[in-house]
Length: 357
Image (cartoon, rainbow, N blue to C red; front, side):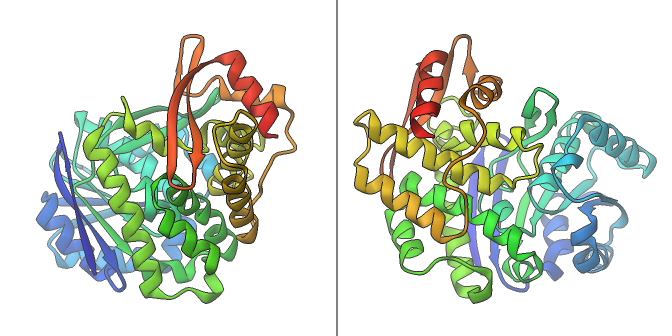
């Protein structure tokens, strides 16, 4: 097991990464969050494998446990689901010092975390990510949200978890499709600031069929450590934390255009490749680096572009929460392991999308 400490304005917490950690959920919640009751939020796919064990662990730690099993998928991450979940917390008798447990992937983590942020003006919660994407990215850093009709993650709160328990053995039960999709975020981290990780993905693609628990633990730990450093330097996304949005401005637009049928990691990968090619055309990124990015994305079975028209992608992208008036903060690719956040006029954003496509 590897333990990574995260220090934020809302307090410090540990991210524990390794195999066989699920039985420790109850103890971790007791130590980090306390309370008399625990409420587990999960989805139907994860519940079949892990809900009973999570409940047993929490009960063994002295909690009175309730749970809610939600439909799997991005369509669950809505204000309607949030409202229903808040009513569930109240019906279960949850107090403001009781603990919400987010057991699942990024959708569950975002939704349960947002519910914890607003229930009784904030109650403790822990993240128990079960997908690679959630382990390397969404479970750490305290960004919680739901989607609105106008776009992805437009309603949310910064609310840090009390602990993160990433049991890499849960990756064995995710579908090949979900695992492949999640690697899009891992590739992002390599381009963002870990050229060594990127080179490893070039030499040996990260695929579920060849999944090794030691490699999984190492990859997750490296991504979490990178995100920890960024979050501690800029908790509320006023500066360097915006670099974590690499590939996301266009990626979120592609995701919305698909009606969320295309996975988040796949959309980030496509957005990353589009931005890398646009940066080559503008003399910001070496062509060889962009070619390597595109090759690694393709080697993992992920898309390197989008068939959606530039006008549609631009209309969706300009609803992104990183917009400031008539300008947008965009993460540009300068090379493998180097990026830059730049404020550009909306017209220039449209040009970047067109050039990258």
